[in-house]
Length: 491
Image 1: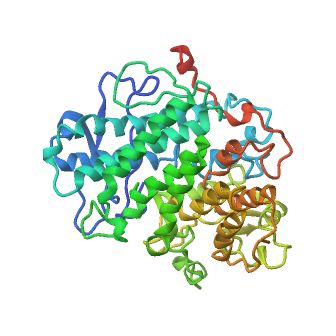
Image 2: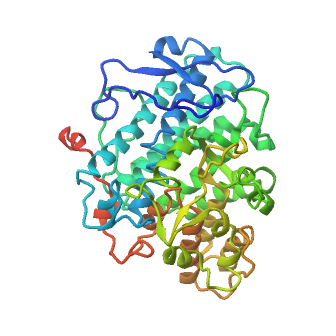
Image 3: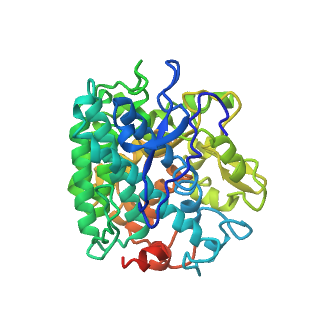
């Protein structure tokens, strides 16, 4: 249950769905309008009603959009499994031999079809398509109801719904499809239907996905965040950095283009985000992470977030799996592995890295991820936050796109992140292309621990193995299997 009144209830009953979105009656979550003192994202649902009733008012569309984000926050998705849970465990980020939940991921002799893993994989698939179904329900109705909307709310809601659809489809690609985009991948659901949609090739999926992002950016061209406005007295338009705003869409496009192998467009989108970075998404100040009181520490570097989710029960989730977890649940890694990752023996590097000093924590002879720690009376500007897109990723994308084109620019982009993480020794200007790529991997590991990004990075770059793991990677480890019901219905 919520830990405070300013919380969003995310224990949502999922829609009855056979396969992805099959149901005899599809209904949407209805969220009670919040009091004026509350943020739009901090309200609780009361019931469900049919979509034709829900979409009679502008408020109904706002509530439907909130429902999409609320499902994304659940533990089976970005509230745990797709961030610090299943995905980081699959990328060998933890020592799992004694972990009762994820231990099958420790051997790399698995097919994701063990009794422990199969239900998780199936639930991830169905829950992600559930989010897409909700976004599609908005998009199926919104154009015909355009007259309902005031101000710029039509563009904002449509833009965010398109972005949600693209975001989740891209993660489905990164999990369930091959990096060979000529191969059959996943269905791309563009409307709410009971029809059996065929799986498309990766190239076909990416074309539709990138079109959605282009349309989202067009609609969000009026986003006040473009003028540096993150907060508003309007409940609906408040905290733009915690939703799929204009710059988050551009950042997602950079990620998507790089997945497609289009470095020109990936770089262009990343650079658009970075060109506004200092004003809108400034690097965290050391004083904000090194505050003397834990409740005042910005553990997730919130000023840099392009898009994040408020997971209201993050404290309880964190205690179950990390901070106060039972030994059979606790997600941890040996001190040797952490010290190697953060290069603590390299002068001027690890010992000064604020990620090592504050977003990790020693626990006996092991380390745990500390970035989601929720102290008592935690500063509400930092609390319950799980980032899904961050400004630093734009530096890494731009650096990778510059390898072989402008190596010095790539090195400078990496040094910018390192400097803002407290590392006082810059990378040498003489690094080779191979060495620059290796440094990006090192940075990726340190920057995104607990965020589920390493798996996709290693998959996209065709890494021979996950860091600190000796098992050679194949499609068995890198492509999650479709649910049996998908295969049964001919996909």
